[in-house]
Length: 457
Image (cartoon, rainbow, N blue to C red; front, side):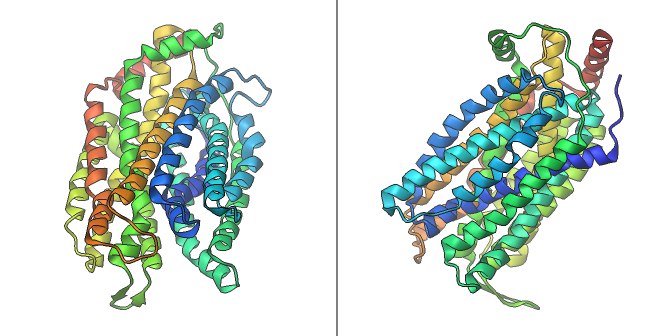
């Protein structure tokens, strides 16, 4: 039986991604330039650090999925982690954006330790949070609705962060703090808010879907997952989407600081590069949010697979066009951003809804449900795509001769332009190619959902 989810609960579910997205966007848009231009770690070292720490962290996702699948409390399987991990999440977030004066080697070691801790605590709260959608309802349309609310929360959190970071940093700098302290104080504000909203998600949501009676076996769960071809397809597509997003996110600050620079605009006068970058990021997230809102009606009419592939191919085309834009053509820069932002926004709720379908498909085929393990793979794909995108960003900056806080050569400027245009386009095309073999259409899943409901009752 499919119970309709009330608006309050959908909003409560969205609060969770409002919390995590503030930090996700801090990491993806500001952490690289914080490490290179504030802490003064070389971009190649940062890229390698991202690769090593995130590869390790990627292994934690299925482990956390297995743990949460086997959690038994009166509060449910997944909800308790939102309560237990909320405050540690905020504390470690502040530590990640702190910069003790340990010398060059000490700073790099400190970055390794705190960033590793941050990714582990991110896993500990976000794998259960992601899995929660799979047990709030078994209705595929309600799941798409929940996924949309999730990403409304996500982009609202990101928009709030990008719209306020430049001004908070300026406020603390004008109050006498240096750049490093300004980042630390600013992140402290987001840390308190994140803990609060995670706890609100815990309070406002409910777990309803009860799995079929089964004996728990980690080995069997992993074997079932390894045989699930649809899971592999979504894993590859998810990684490619995050390569597209993380390359763009990680290069925005560099693109505006070193290529676009300060601009004199009609009606606005002289606008500093960081304010332009903040506006660009905010517009990117606003248009992502528009895409999220379009995801449900578009997928209802054309199907999730068709909408996913079309959105990514359109994003790739306009990403290539972006390469040829002059740095003084601010209107064109922001206009292309709108189109790519809508396309990117459409895809993300579809990914999470499709993973919920894959969890049902796995239970239908095997008689065993491993929601946490399936959803942890989505978190793993996020981090693997983010890992590759972040590492590639650092390595490309180094390969093209980037020097922090200096006038860039033509070669390094070319590298920055490619990082925000051509290279992300390749990731978008790859994600669409992965979906060619995906077979879990909405009609197909309706039959599976009805059959599972009969078995559970």
